[in-house]
Image (cartoon, rainbow over all chains, first blue to last red; front, side, top):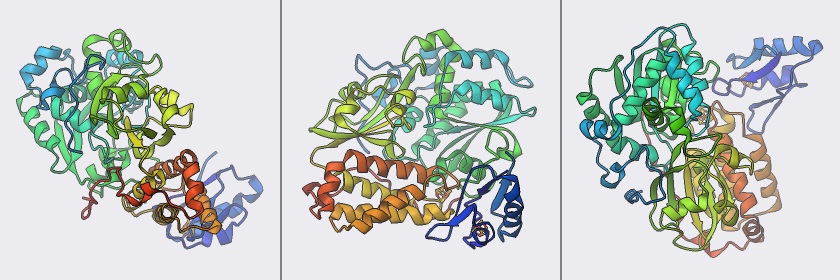
Length: 64
Length: 432
Ligand code: SF4
Ligand code: SF4
């Protein structure tokens, strides 16, 4: 599993970085910088929570 | 730019332009037939035309719109979708410096329309569009050309889009044709997967399609007789800046940059650098640039990019930093205003470069600039910010000596004159 941001939909709420700081940081404008490495199994629960909580559905989980 | 196309010379290889570039008038239907002969006959069939697909594969044709992707592979992906597809010929040419597609459409509209019909046959499309800027001369020429041609096997619609820079991006074209704004969309799905009306959509540059029209007539062997082995054929190149006869030439792929400048009358002043590939390309030191071959592979090997075949010659008297700051400011203003890193990052980078050009600088400012240049690429929905950053990064490398001087708060004389690189008039208003 990998995470990607749809930058058109993202409204810089920053919630994702709070929920999954191991993988997501915010840039100086408040937009997420997402590590594009595959997410190890023990962290995937955090990734899924961040995806589910994004208010604009901008954070997407992709297979592989 | 208002300079007319240069008269063909002995060392151009004129396949697409033939003699027509001299007059700048569209080749009429009868002139077109007299020059090229009739289009090989064929019809639409389910799953596309295997003979045509094979011919394009063998020809080695690559896209002439910027990415240089093998055309045959692109056609096959769309042909294999299992449903009737859609073809979009991209004649939008967003770059202010670019003129080659405008010239091609002005003089050889039937060649482009032939290519569209063939591509539609190859991928089994039941509708084709030619996308051009609203109100451009090309739309009138194309309409007139469509009116005198025999009925094509599928409707060909001239689509006139707003002339925003990023409207020429393929997902933006598709979004507009689907009734939306001419702005890039988040991909995937890419147009070849789900495009116009949800169907597999082939988006090809108009020059690529014109080559297809010749390949179908003369064969893949003929096509490969000219140009680079890996990226064969001829290509249209737009040359502007400090050359005697700016304009468009048609040359064999792999021709050296210096030779192309010579075809444009040669440099009109001592050159310090050449912007190879236009505003999505890179600055190259003049001495290095002159010997480089115009191929995707050859330019990539030195960190460059062919882009849509644009060369801009920068004279010694100009300031590369000020010119780049000017272009970055233009590109920042041309974003589709959709993605945070692009909308915030490009103006920040443009502002820093402008300060650098003026000599109002501090080490902290350099830190900001370098951070932004690392922060922005790859984070927009389209490649607009990536191209702008690539241009800025190459400027800092190629004009490193000037950067040092400017950092010491001593801008050069060139920074005080009005910039020479063309930027389009800002397009305001509707994205529909
Ligand atoms: S939570 Fe969603 S909208 Fe907010 S920054 Fe993250 S991706 Fe963007
Ligand atoms: S990256 Fe920039 S130009 Fe591309 S869609 Fe996003 S805002 Fe528009």
